[in-house]
Length: 572
Image (cartoon, rainbow, N blue to C red):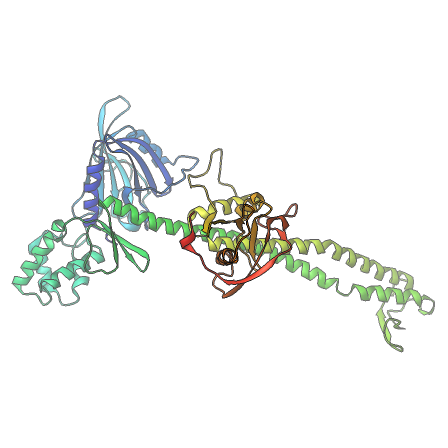
């Protein structure tokens, strides 16, 4: 991605324009590698500045994403609050040729003397880090240094700050050295530019190669074309008109750019400045990542519980197998009782007529010869009684486990049908209420995510509501009028769908559309013909103690439809 020295330098210029003279009001550290600064600038209001040293999302810029702060403030955040809270940002600068942005902040020390501190952010993928320095000395870092890093570069508290070790690469503006590189090229142009020139990511090197080839500057270079090519390289990014944008390819954001790279194809979306383009790109990228991670986490919770339930069912099945012969135990006990008079003492087996089988059939019974025939019969009856009691005890356990598995299927269906992060809020609340997910709330309200609302449609004047999760399904069904029409897929997990009738008869075409929407919001989505039951809400009941989303209904009729989202009818 073009979070290279070229783009980083321009981001720093935008930040300076927006933040210079701004006062740092708040500092938070929502994540291990993320910092949020609330900066008030007169005339422009408050900016939410995000500094990230995360390998996948490293950057300095603005952010709109809501993030929850930890219950205990991390030590580096406390250090920043001590030194920078209330400070005024004098400047934001980019280091030429480096992926480094430096904030110079004027604040006051414990003796109310004016001092100057620097916050230096190295935007270098997995090596990204944040340093707080004063008079060139390191006061603290966001990430602690490994032994390997410390051996290459001193980044310990109290030591002098130095830029990352220089790479064996040539700066873009050193035209004579760049010309020598061009003259020596024997392989692919893009690869050479990327490997030999300082501060370029691969996409920027590719764009440079495209510009060179467009002007006829291609290997093998002559001294003249090398000189002209080096001159072009030295000024290419600096002279390119700033036109910030984000590139979309196949419906996904590829990256943000200071101007459209002509070497790339896709859909370009333009923004007023580079900070807005960067914010839009990372909002989408981080949002998608959080959505993916949240989906995996919730599915993992469900799978873990499914594994426990299946293990419990396996134990129950083993017990049922042990009890499978209980009727045979009872039969043998009765046969012994009927023939006690003819069974000799101290015998280990006996063959008796089987009154329960065909005439002339016999059965051989193994005996404990240390016991009398009567005691052997009593022993068989005791085993029979124990097996009978066991079956009676585990029958409700099996029913409960199977019911819980069916419930988890509905939750799994809801998780896989979620469309955005907000859809998980009530699913998580539901799992927490069922004891499947630990609450992360400790003495304060969690997060700032917007409230989850059901899907709403207008179909030929009728309002149709669709639940997004089990809690919402319960609320929709409970709040519906008795004459409203209620829909649910037959034999599949789906959302509860309610057509508000207001005493009117629902036309067939409205029923069909509602059924198609119901099929779309079901686990059978895309399965071809899907049966959807519909009935009046008055025939829908929720049993006492039932799991969220579970109801029973009667007097239903069934429509066979194909799933259809009907997005054109959606109004919420």
